[in-house]
Image 1 (cartoon, rainbow, N blue to C red):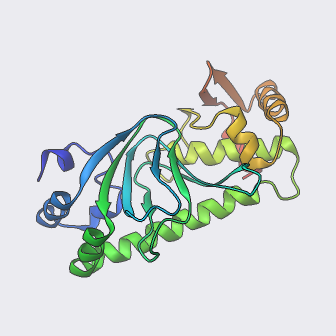
Image 2: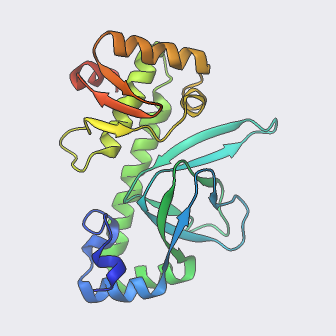
Amino acid sequence: MTTACAECPVRDSAACAVLTEAERDELARAGHTKKLARGETLFSAGDENSACATLVSGALKVTQYDAEGNERILALIHPAGFVGELFAPFPQYDVVALTASKVCLFARGDMERALGAYPDLAIALFRRSQEDLHAARDLLALGSGRSAGEQVGGLILALARAASDTSCHPAREFDLPLTRGEMANMLGLTIETVSRALSALEKTGALKRRGTRGIELVNPAQLSGYA
């Protein structure tokens, strides 16, 4: 097993976990790791040099801009998540780092060859893409007919689940990958409304804020009704 794979924190949860060690080593030789600073673009819409990647650490946003230049966040990518265009000539959206991040990056042609060689990998990526699609739909649905407190509470719980090492329960402590402005962007609220909603959730005992980004879930059950 390559050193990079042996030390990878998502080696047991990413799509490549279905491969044998020999198969994973072969796949690793076709790709390379890349570090991104917060705000750095991984993929740009219309870029002809299309590629795909598994997120090793950090967080990414999938975003687009309307005719007036307003950003709309369409999805969030968390560790072990897969992002990229395999069946389009070039990316349709921008993919940008929300925090300092690290990805395992592959040229599209190399990934297409790997999918042909390893059917189990193709199935795993299909399953991962389906899970990510459902998660993106759930996030977009948060703004439908709910109060600001319910929207923010639901988003906090979704981020806590994404930050957890297990699917059984959300992380009790984690750092928000989104700024107040980015949360407002996703939910169609103002930054002031998001801040008031967070303060209200803290007063009710649902959560505690730790510094600028830190969140501690005190009563996850209280938030579960919002998600």
